[in-house]
Image (cartoon, rainbow, N blue to C red; front, side, top):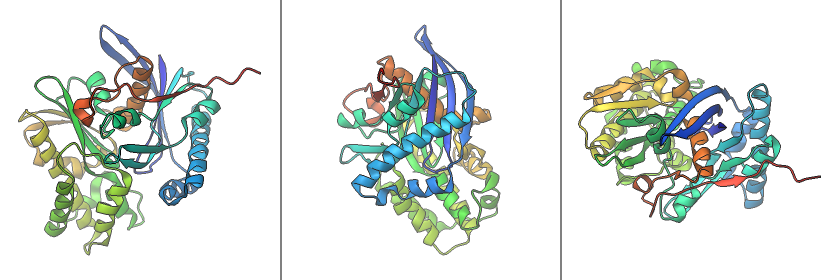
Length: 358
C-alpha cells in the first residue's frame, strides 16, 4: 500500500514528505521509501507557526484549517508527478502538549488536508494514548520496532531528541531526552546563520561548566522518565536561558552538544539493560559531526550507526506513514510500556478524502 507520510519538525525547517510502500506479511512490516522531499516554509508561515500559541481560540481554529489547506497545497505543488498515494499519515505541528492535564493539540486540520488532497488522512495520533493516561509521546518506537529491529537502541535528533530501547523481554521503552536542534539552531541564528553546518562552530567552542550544569539541573527536574517535551517547554526552559547566558555562541553550542551527549548517556544507563550494543542515529542532528563525536565519546561502549541520508532525513515521515497504516489495520500505534498509558493504543483520527456525491 502506498502511504504518504508528512512530518512538520519542531525546528520549523519545513515539511518532510515521504511516499512509502508498506505491507504486513509473515508478521513483519515490509517497507520502502519510494519518493521523498523537504519543502521549506515561507517566512510568513514560519512566523504564523511561531506565533500560534499567542492566538485566541477563534484565530487558532482558523489557523488550524488554513494550515491544513497550506500543507495540502505544498504536497500538490511538490509531489504532483509522484505515484498516487492511497492514504496519508499526518503528524501536524505541535502547539500544545500537556500530558499532566491529559490533552494535546497538533495544528493542521486533517479534514482540510483530506478534502484538498482527495485522499484519506490519519492524524492526531497522540490523543487516544493520553485518554488512557499516557503522555502521548514518543511515537518513534513503532517504526523502530517494525522497520529497524536489527538495532538495540534508536536515537532521533530533531528539534527535540528522543530515544527508544528494547528491554530483555523485547518490550519497547522510550522517552524524549533533551532539546536539540531547536536550541542549537537558535544560537546559530544569533550569528545570522540558519544552522551550524556540520557542527563546525561547536567544534571550535569550549564547554561552559556553569551553563552545562544549569541545563542538566533543568532536565533532571523533569525526570523520572518517560518525559514528553513540547516546543514551549524547550523555548521557555532551555533555549531562552541559553540565549541570555553571557558566553560566546561557539561556547554555547559546544556546551549544548555536551549536554545532549550526557542526556543520551543518562537515558541509556537508565533505560537499557545492555552495557553496549548498536544505536541508530537519525534526524538532522546526525549530520552534526561534533555532536555525534561527543555522543560517541560519552557512550564509548556503544556502536554508533549513521544510516544513509534518506533514512536520516525521512525516518519521521516514514513513521507517520507507518502510524497511518497501522491505524487502518487496527494495530497499536503507541505502546503502554513507552507512554505509561493503561494499554497499547490503536490511535489516530481518520478523515475521508472522498467528496460528497454531486
